[in-house]
Image 1 (spheres, rainbow, N blue to C red):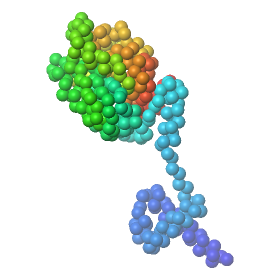
Image 2 (image 1 turned 90 degrees about the vertical axis):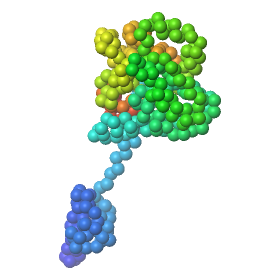
Image 3 (image 1 turned 90 degrees about the horizontal axis):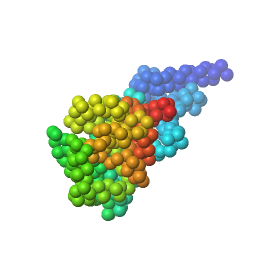
Image 4 (image 1 turned 180 degrees about the vertical axis):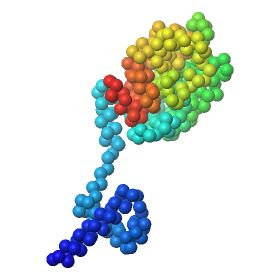
Length: 323
């Protein structure tokens, strides 16, 4: 009896030692076998014994369960469909954006179908999304640019065209560019341009948009928003935006923390789709990442321009906690 108990105790001790080396010190079975002077198969049996007897308790914490709970919280609080990308807090901001853009690219193939008009707002985030699109053959689909891209340094056509052409290629769609500057120097110039038949043709496509895809511009973002670093704004523009308390933009149309936007002076010169018009688009997909954009995202939701949001888990948690 005593001998049997001794053998049992020795087995428990060996199993406990093997489990500590394997699970806590990340040693391979071969290394453990060498250290214990036994075979790899014996180590495998010791680890199985440790699990079977409760010496080791293995738990799998699924990120998707917590993400599902977060998505439901955002749906209830803000009446939006949240598509949260699970990730740890140690991921750098560029990788965070890449992973969110990858998820958005895959989701859009579910949202975009034949005979749709898809409005695209160019920018750093949507450029990444355009590279992650999953090909889906459609017919009668049109991709239309929602805001001009030119400034005093460049026409912006090459940059915006690359993004739109990737969307067009992915969905076999017709592409309609918007060859105007991002901002006119004078609101009267914009008003005159909007009366031109060639411009009205593109505006007509924008008016029929079924789904709009956009990122959120923010001066606080760790991954620079193109409108803030691409030569689109001068010193007077920045002063005007500060005085008008603008917190961010969608397609070069600026808004405040409370979602208001109409009396922000720079918007009178912007070529982007007005937020009142954007609100009438049936599906409005916002792609955003990074903790620095929590205020901008909250403002966009307050403006009523978001129906779907693709975002990282950290940003989602901040959005819930700040509510």
